[in-house]
Image (cartoon, rainbow, N blue to C red; front, side, top):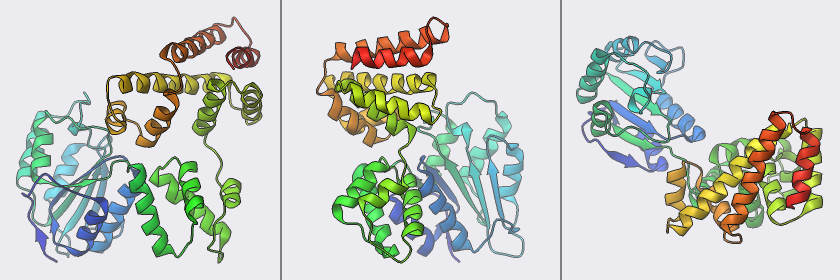
Length: 348
């Protein structure tokens, strides 16, 4: 197998192009897989292992967690010669030294890493998985890696990208989703690719040979997450739907969800609405807001749709009331379940 030397740095391909390149084209010796979409990270790993025909227990394969391993061990591993083979495959997850993380790493090890990134071992395929929202571009080690590595982008996909990826996935699976059912399914999964694939697998197992999916199948098999329930609760509060808000709180209480936990998530939801409202007034668009707040673009889209209907002072009032309720419960001034219900009655 021909392995392309690193040196054409700063190349960032779409995930489909990257997976195809790993499978069919000459490999480089150095890769940076940057992003937090877990499903895509696993797909990249499988692509490398399949291409080099290695298993987890293979002598020519090693995987390390940068937050746990002594970096000297990694340095020795990537410079070692392959054992009865042409190449070694080495994965390094959580390379915290590429971020603004203040944990110490020996200066000599940093120098060795920078030197290695500039002149990687030709018999090693070294892949770093940086599952962080952002890397510290000011660091020499980050600059050296990005200059010399091939970059594979596994950031959270945008709404339309998730739709396209999943439609292509379905074609290979032979499963049929009517258009309206597909949209309903993707919304239930918050357009998060990892959850889309995970929940699809559940549907596939349940339906067996029946490859036609309905909304009823989705409702039966895909439970709402706590965050989705809290988002729904915030909608009931904003829309003054008292009975629905109280019923949902009752359902969550039956599921042993504590009011303190519900309040904490609600506080986060209203904080998000306030931030989005402010940034929209400053002229920022959906993608910019998602990048600034480091959250999935679909959450920003939902928030943008909602905050257009409300004044900032209304959102701030609901937020302040929640913060005060949280303080009163934690300081023992009120009984938590009764107080939460009173908040819903007062504000709905």
